[in-house]
Length: 360
Image 1 (cartoon, rainbow, N blue to C red):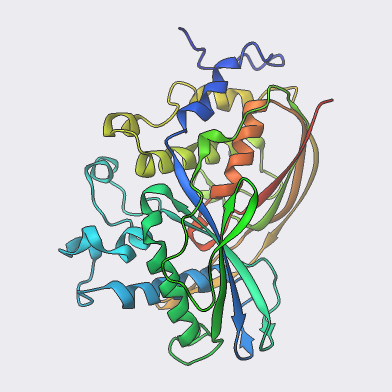
Image 2: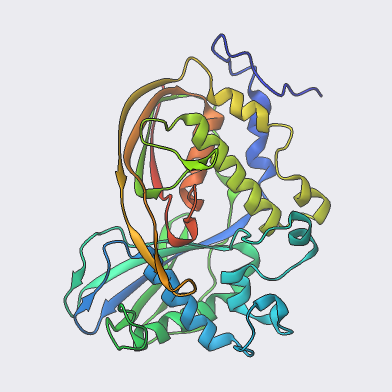
């Protein structure tokens, strides 16, 4: 069956023309993940940076490496003979080095853990106060959850203030929950049960796609959006729906190639190579109207222990709204909420919320 690779840009695209794009959810059925929520309570007064994603991820990586690494003298995980059984390398270094990653020839491969950091910007937390953060873990790696919980427990004992090992900002892990079709369910609670109850495993493809275009679609960017196009970061006045659809499509392709349950020859091609150009053409449909743009730049910095210096995490915050967005694009933008978009997503950047009002 012939599938058109693009649509005419001079007139609105009809649902009959983009019906092949309804296949996209089915093609992503083999992408599995678990969605976790962690609640911690400070056992002493704590001071944290305004943006907590980079600190939280870095501290968690450090503790898991301390817990798991059997050859700490090596410069690279790829040289280690224990690589295939190391939770740290597989969760935070993408260093497994299988034949697909060799094919892709990447030095910074997509990672299976996606952090959703605390969103509050305050920096002082009195003793007894709680915060929550979330993690998406791609399906092949959910069996490492007990080790991830253990690393968070150890991080709480050590503290994760500005100086590692200083004993600052100690906390206790109160609760670990998994997201299910019926809401959040506790799988591990204090005292810390390191072997939690089974998590609900989701499939990306199980999210249904509507046949009705969105009357209004608003995206609220909750952590900095760092979208790089043509060698530079997109400014607030330049952001378009096409930028976002291209970024989300590429993100899903990366996740599919690395973490799908499909055989190698299917993963190598990506989930929808024959539909990609059609998605981009649909994003330029002239019937899609920009309603409002309320985006502003946010300047943040993080400290890199590897580089021994601070690096920028600048990006865009705020909201943007369109009308008459076709259903396949709405579906992609809704799924993108799970996996973030843009650069520095491993530090929690590119997190957004999609508000959809369907045409009645």
